[in-house]
Image (cartoon, rainbow, N blue to C red; front, side, top):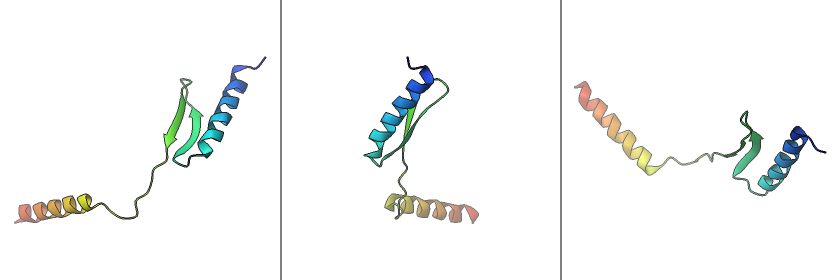
Length: 68
């Protein structure tokens, strides 16, 4: 009979094999509570957002106004 640790390793290996097909997710892990955790990989953006630039300009203008 398979013990709990061996069973968990087999389950994690099967899940990781499935996750390899999709590059969006990282490896599956089991936390201290016994939950299986699958994290989504963070995509790095090459170009800053237009909205981000607008807010940066607004904030820098507000700072300039408050200095006077």
